[in-house]
Image (cartoon, rainbow, N blue to C red; front, side, top):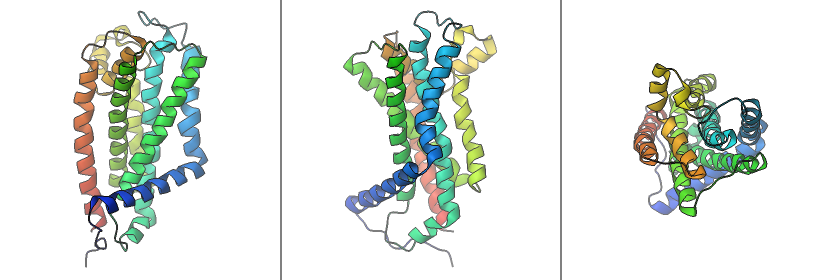
Length: 264
């Protein structure tokens, strides 16, 4: 006989209550996991300092100082790095039997996924705040209005949600924790093939074409342009054009795959 969740409580209130409980659970796991704390706090700062002082005097950005150019790239890299922890957390829940236990409870089943996604976004917000804060200490000087800060925040929020749901999908599809960690490396390394660290104008023609037409580059360019008062052009709209559909499709597909997996 196929297994199913116990009857779920109906209504928005109970669903939100279930999601809140699972978000708190994921955050408690985060606070107890030294590796995830290092990944969320220490790694972005290390990346910023490494590239700031290793390449700061060697790369011609064509205008802004390298630290001003770099900040948006490190922000995107730090968000991508969190994908591994999210994918592993989801795969671990599916593997260690906790989802089976939740089946016996009258709860909103996908709250497990929502818990991982929301905690990942909160972790990313902390990482972004740290990168900006440490950036000020190493000569990052933004020149953004309140509206530009809010627009950059909106771009990053959509990007964080999409990356978190993509990582969650990888955790659902993976056969185990090791596989989930391996799959997530795709998301971790893709931002390096963008304009995060060096201008695409300095790249060979074929590589430049790839970099200019992949989804991470508009996010980097939009946030950079908004924060340091460069011409934004259509970068904000390109970022939303890439990541809003990715978010919607990935969320729907992840939910469907999770329900199919847990009701077998």
